[in-house]
Image 1 (tube, one colour):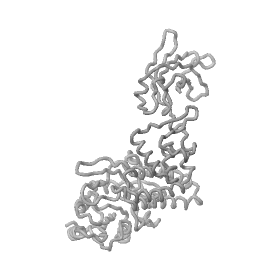
Image 2 (cartoon, rainbow, N blue to C red):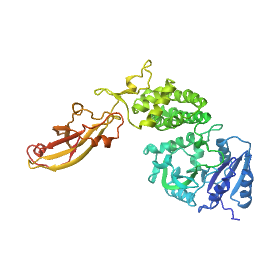
Image 3 (cartoon, rainbow, N blue to C red):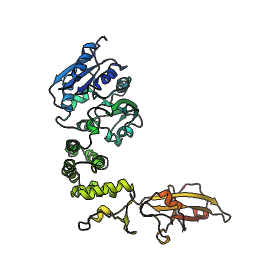
Image 4 (spheres, rainbow, N blue to C red):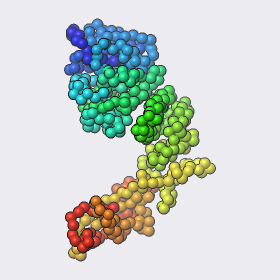
Length: 478
């Protein structure tokens, strides 16, 4: 039995019906290289042998202690653990009782905080199952590189760092802002994690994996694995609303929060909404009803100003959601599954998406369907660049606007523009279109080919002189 030193860290572990995983979780805590910690296990009314497993750990290791309460849910169990922190503890952390940690996790996080003085530190996460460990997709971008003393306003990908358990908080910071997890709901992490990111003076972000997030293969599925639960949808929307309420409440006193709210709204529309759409085709009537009621209302509340900046397929899905056109929304999701990112397009000068399943008796506004630079970005490739005997630089390759293709020579007119870096001079070079079916193969389009995307041009270097003189410089080709 290890001697009990004054703990610097309290680790709160809510426990509920995890007899298959709990011992492995607690063993990974006992094996930490940082030893000045306590583990506050909160049994939330388990009906299996979880409480007995936790009690056995408390009897064997003085760093582990057990609190029992009637079932109140994950948020309430975490809050119970916070209220039971040992006096003098500097840091606190949370662990879900079916997960594990690498042995150096808390040593790495606390040494970093001791050095930087940041309000909390967060680390990378792997997902694991019997086949092994892989990078957690939701943590990949924010934790791609280590960033010390950073902030969400300077590094916006931290908006996706919503989980409770990959962090160590400074206790004074936690108590200063009186953080508490929402009770009686699922998806309770974000209403604490996102406000904490905004309220922190600085945050340490570590690329080293410090948490192993289990993907359950047997027993009851975890909350994040049970995507078609209507209550999960309702609570996820509620979680988004709670973060929006936090940001909205500060807009009047700090103008920066208006920008923060706009960024968060874009994230909610662009990254959160697709999680609901992804499972919609295979969902039951109860889930679809909850989706229309709660996701539709959320999209209306966020407003059209935020939606306007999204790509056309995204705008259309939100429009169909808000207007409760479920059959067409399902058809659009199935269409995308079959055709990928290809859009059926009508028109050339003012192109618009032209989906065959949309109800013509209920026309969708042009503002939703009209394509812009997001859909019409240039696809191009330069195949050859050679100096000819005429002293000109001869270029050949292919180029076309995404979604429009280049089906006819008359519709494949091109202009090559050279622009001097750091200057205003532009040189327009005539271009000839030619047949190049290889562009169609490279484009991978479904609805329009790009056989006439080929081009050739000859650049006369004399036109690049500045007032008749040669000057070193860089020219961009557009």
